[in-house]
Image (cartoon, rainbow, N blue to C red):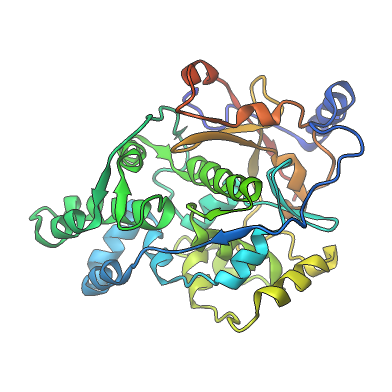
Length: 365
């Protein structure tokens, strides 16, 4: 990728003209008359790592040390306090649409975006420069116990921070092997100091895992379930007003959302019924903690945004969900989107990585 995360920003009118032209020329990725098989039940597991030891370590640090950690790694520790509602998550999985890489609830399309996840994780020191683009193939796993011992005894505070953050990424954000941190996660982690943003990789693995489970009809979700559920609640629950604290430099949407009580007594069947009947007026389209600005909408020769994950590459179409930014909605071209999905174990996968410019759209106020 080029060094700039957003190399060119265009206004709404120009993007709309471009989108309509591309839609007419290339059209949709699906054949006319296609009906998404959203009602085939997926038996998905959201089994999580035991995070008690990580929480105990975090709680043992004083406020000054915690603040230093926040400055270096954003609000990652908040993920440790988010309880995964397995009934809601299983219900959500039934509405994942692999054809368009989004959740489809009747006439409502929703999907987590790069900008939303950046705002939630609150990582200003790593969010602006580059996206992860040099994946590895097969890798080994590091036992959590080995990392725990380093956190507890290493004399260098910065090293303890680094290992703690790596542990959160490996056990919570990319929990591929329970009780272990995949070595591929450390490859991404090593690039954070160079200005690499982890968010596209987080989204790519979220989409990849949802797709794999939907297509197989079963499987364990190995993306960040905590972040996905927080994102969902932000759009599902109505709020009376946006707090002025959103505009404060010290404001943390994730910390506020973790402290907000949510009902956990709703069955999976009830959640499915609620989501089946979800209407546009039931959705808080722009999350109350999100400040409008510039968003990615395409990259170079692609008509959408390719994402490089930890184990696979993926693509998504931000123009499909402009309503989440309270911007005008229109149908984007998605022709070729499926070709962006491939595993790094495939032969010649490196040839599929190209250098391209990230183009953005200036959101309407």
